[in-house]
Amino acid sequence: MRADNSIHITTAAKQRHEYTRAKAIAALHELDQAGTAITFEAVADHAGVSRSWLYTQPDLNDEIRRLRSMRHRTPTTPTPSRQRASEESLRQRLDIATRRNRELAEENQRLRRQLAQALGQLRDDNADPRNNISVP
Image 1 (cartoon, rainbow, N blue to C red):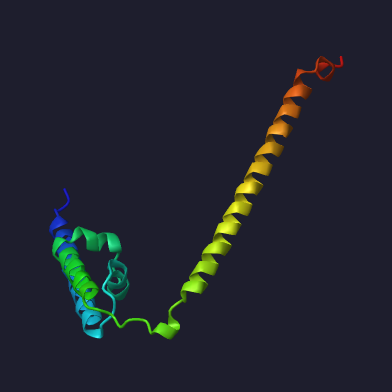
Image 2: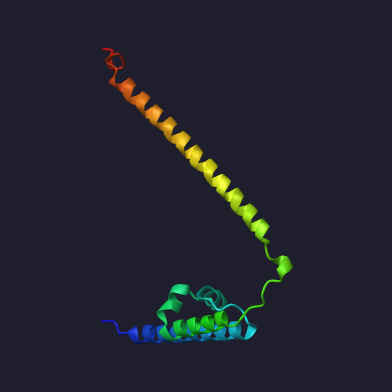
């Protein structure tokens, strides 16, 4: 009978888990210190862990959400007025998008009519007894 070596597997798994947690915590602190946006993806990439694993760790999950919400509360530097889109520019973009939407709707209707005609023609062709003559 073989000896039960499962204790070694369990110990290795615990060590791997603690090492992974340490990497994630370090990544979280490094990103926070650097002023980088704190997201699950950023922490996972920086630590070399999966995002799904981060979501399963309640304390890390809470800390990421806490840091992220703190960043959202701090006011960002507003975009200078010369870099903002003017009202006329926005109106022009809206007009272009509206026109394109109308063109696509018309094209959709045209294609639907063509499809209906083609299906009707196909149905008529199949209903014509002359088309169903079988050759011996």
